[in-house]
Image (cartoon, rainbow, N blue to C red; front, side, top):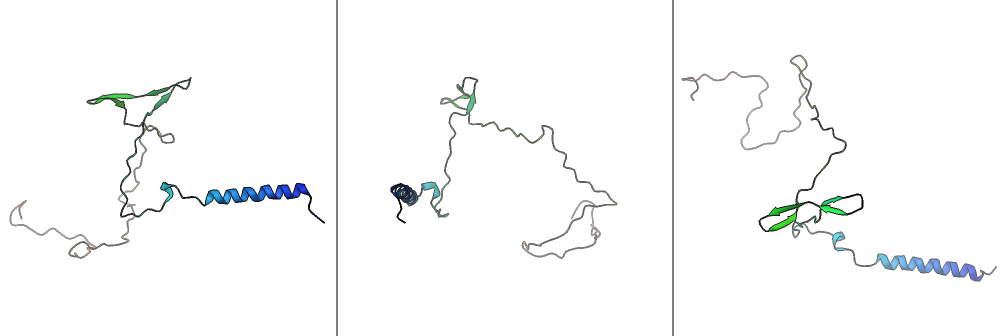
Length: 133
């Protein structure tokens, strides 16, 4: 059975679209997508210009500040935390003398000369004068 003209036309359009998609994917990547050599990377300054609000008609209102060199946009961006309550969060740890907080040593990092790990309280050595060495 021979394919008709409609099938040939549809398959030709599909093949052309696939070729177009492949051609668009083979271009040079954007500069932000190129791999970075960390030795050569310098901080990129970012300036947000025109930070402000919109009124009901969609007209922007930008907060300005007077500086020594003239009027400039406000560099402070307001941040609102939506899911955090306005009052401080109580983060007290519940422990008592009878039920102390469990603490464990997971790793000891040497820093300079080692001192022995003391597992019991040791009395302070006596001094010839109070408060002196």
